[in-house]
Length: 131
Image (cartoon, rainbow, N blue to C red; front, side, top):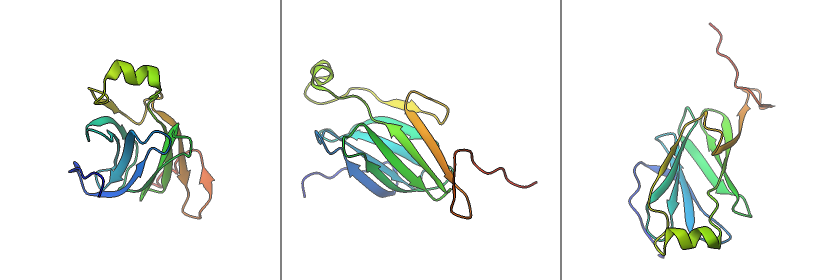
């Protein structure tokens, strides 16, 4: 085992940032997608947008974004924090020192949201429930 952290909820999926390995994303039963500093375990971002448990999270191969899939039938793609060498110097050796809470309507962190309809088709807008 390399590292172990206690998470704020039951985690169903986690993914390590593939290029620098300095952060990881986790999702689970609380419907939040959380980004953590790998070295300290500190939560550095928290994204809300799903309306069901998050079953899968994965970083893009370049580490610039990560995706999450939920029981609510949606897939969301989130922009990762930019952690280039200049920014790492300003944060210090232990990573970031604060956390950012991000809501579903916050376009800074939420890049795109998709909805998979009950018949398996991709739709950019969620289906409206019948009255």
